[in-house]
Image (cartoon, rainbow, N blue to C red; front, side, top):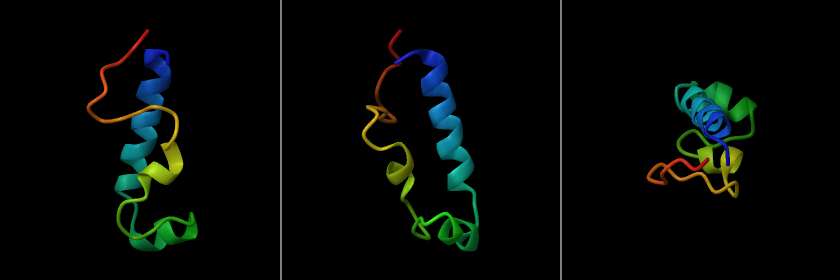
Length: 52
């Protein structure tokens, strides 16, 4: 995965993490956690080094 794609995925996760529980519910996410629902399965782990 290109670094720019990794960066964008991490930015999206960060934006979701700060949403209120109400906004998270409106997106179909649980109140806490659930970020993996959005980006799960693309091979992005917090401790995974970037690849180019």
